[in-house]
Image 1 (cartoon, rainbow, N blue to C red):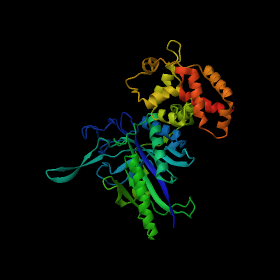
Image 2 (image 1 turned 30 degrees about the vertical axis):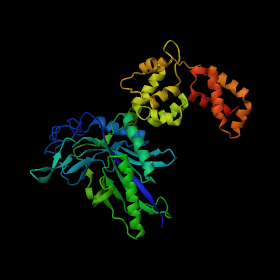
Image 3 (image 1 turned 120 degrees about the horizontal axis):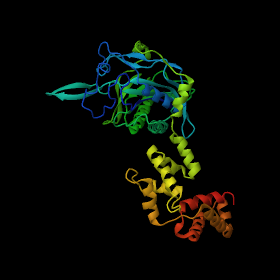
Image 4 (image 1 turned 120 degrees about the vertical axis):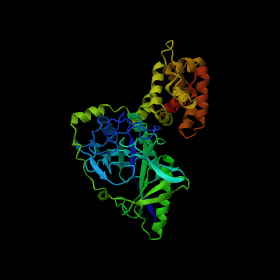
Length: 447
């Protein structure tokens, strides 16, 4: 019998607000002296009352809108009850049945639709530090992280393999960074991933979800997410082939042994005894308030990539690399503005500037866009011919070599190199081979 993976994701993102979710303590905790960013609220002391962080709520809605979610006009916080040493109150303030954002979707490059079930907001827990004191093993608790705003994205189980998961996660990380709501640094724990994995019989309908699922907790590496999914897929398939149903449980990823390990049986929602947080009133949003938050969303990576390809005639490969970070994409556009302003001359094409940034590893921290154009590219003393002049020369070469052009259209693509050489020879030292190649292929389609 053949089995197919059924994979959903829970992704936690620590928001980069100045203060914590329900108090005024500094939210930054990485590398800070333990238990120095704490107060009665984040320590859960009697009588302390939470006050929601408005910025964290707005940022959560911002990501929800970017993920094409519907924003609920009324939302609320709930208490999620469970006991663990890093949870000082004995409950976590989270959201249950009225999250901020619901019913979103993302389309992957191959057309696979990934539905977003919800995007909600909660507070992070403290951090356990396992150590040894006087020869005795013990666990210490650092509450600096306790109460930090934690956004959670929950998908439907729409992923079919680890490659789709990898694409989605990298796109989400880039989106979060473009929105400016988190550094999403996995090494610092700002982005943590929990895949839910099960297997279904290939003959059963896709909508029929298996009667169990295994959650792998708190993975902080894209590579480990892929490995965990691939390991679980193999482990569960072997059990099913023996006629056994995998146990519904929570597992962890053991990096040293390259495998998942059992932690505990997986809880259901009723195990947490959710009830509305009595100290925080419901949140209400008007359409005007949501529209105002939507205005704050910048051009997102996917939109920018499409525009770079269309407007600057870049290849998908070039555009994909340039939009990897917002800083690099913004730097590239600034360099394009500078190009052509030096002595009224245009020293390079958008494609050539892209290649300088991609292939020559320009340090954008120390090299300004002006310096790149004026002192780096212009110093080569290569001034490009105008677009009109290049177009004229290409037309001339195609007319003179009509047989080669006809051969290309018949599938003899090797002649393209010959035609490029002819154009380069006529233009001389000002020739941009990549731009010539692109234009030749474009012209050959209609010649």
